[in-house]
Structure formats: C-alpha cells, structure tokens
Image (cartoon, rainbow, N blue to C red):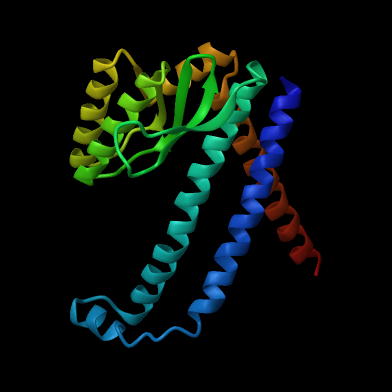
Length: 223
C-alpha cells in the first residue's frame, strides 16, 4: 500500500508542477491582452481591478478544473490497477451508430466496464443521448457498464441529468455510483481507501507550506 501511496504522491507532484507552469504562462500571456472590454465591466459596476482579477481567476480556473479532474481519474485508475493489474483502458466499436466510431472504457476488468469521472456537470441534452447509446453499446458487447463519479454536480439541471443517467444504467442492469458511494465502491472493489490517501497527502502538503512560511518569517526577522 505504501508503494501505491508513493505513486499517487508522485502523480500529484507532477500534476501540481504542470498546473503551476500553465498558470504562470497564462498570466504572463494575459499581460499583453487587449483589455478594451473592461469598459463593459465598468458599465456593469465592475472596477478595472476587479475585472483583472475575474479574468485571471476565470482563465486559471479552467486549468485547475481540468488538472484536478485528470489527476483524480488517473489516481483512481492506479488503485484499480493496484488490485487488478490486468485491467486496461480500451475502445469498443459503436455498433448502434456511425458517430462516434468508438467508445472508450476507462478500465475494463473482466466484464466490468468502468467509467471513472471526477465530476460531470454537463447540462447539454445531447449528453444524455450519447451516454444512452454508450451504455447500450457497452452492454451489447457483453460488458457491465459501471459509472464511478466522485463528486456530484451542484446545479439542479446537471443533477437532473445525472439522475437520468443513473436510471439509464439501472435499465441495462449496469451500476452507477456517485459521491460517497463512488469512494466506497472504489474502496470495496480495490481494497484501497483513496480518499484517505488524498487527505493524508493534502495534510502533508499543508504542513510543509506552513513550515515554509514560518521559516521565511524567521529569516526576515533575522534580517
């Protein structure tokens, strides 16, 4: 288990470094942006300073959500592979239509076709149609479609879509786990408490940051 935790820590460090680099580059790029649209911000009661912060957070936030999702999905896959090393990511032919040509299975273990999601906040109606087709295609290939989503969306429309998807999975004798159920499913399926591992890593990072700040304060006092 220590080996797995070390792999997840190294994965987190890699994602953190890449995220920091992306954010730094974007902030530098934004220094040369045309900010003439701030006129409209001001008309709507947003100061130039507030507008700058909003644009920065909006841009960097997109990177954060992308990296957070990719990290958690990859960390979960490490857990699945820890228990089932022969499990694979694979693609299957779409037997019910021409687009897309294939559907991807995040982790195929025997007949278990597991889709790993950190969060799905999609509100697009076509999303339901595509997922419906995807689940039926997986079932048609002889697999059991299983959806594991660690964080439930916040908005009512997105929540309703997830409720519909859960019904779709149930209708084809598949399995759907979201929120706490997803963490529990992973723990029971793999014997790995990923959430606890992530809590420990997060606490270790916060402790290091606190120590770093304290050391910097001490150094300044010495000066």
